[in-house]
Image 1 (cartoon, helix red, strand yellow):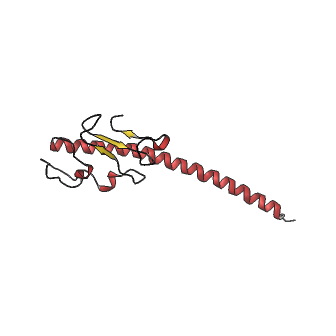
Image 2: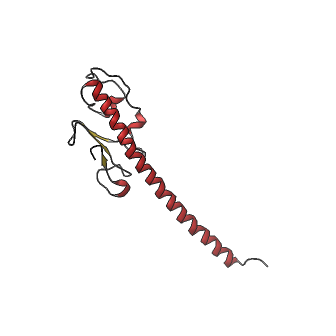
Image 3: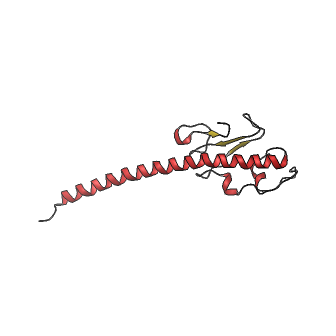
Length: 129
């Protein structure tokens, strides 16, 4: 007594459906984890910018000044950050504006899409929020 071809196909289809559901759920959890890590990274990078400002009297003109001493730095004690820390978990650069619209500087995590605006995991988060 074996299985018919139809029964075997039904089992294969069910396994495929279950596999697709599992992969979808795992993908959502990965995105959720990356979004949370990006927000935490924003906080850490913001602190590094503040450390630079304490040493040099003002925030850096651009984020690369955290890695390489600019000519205008008075008391550069860096490097303050690594190149990999200037990109979010999706590999997009953080947005940076000095002087900022919301404080002495604005640091922005653009989320999954790496673009201004968006909802869900593509929603922007700023250091002033």
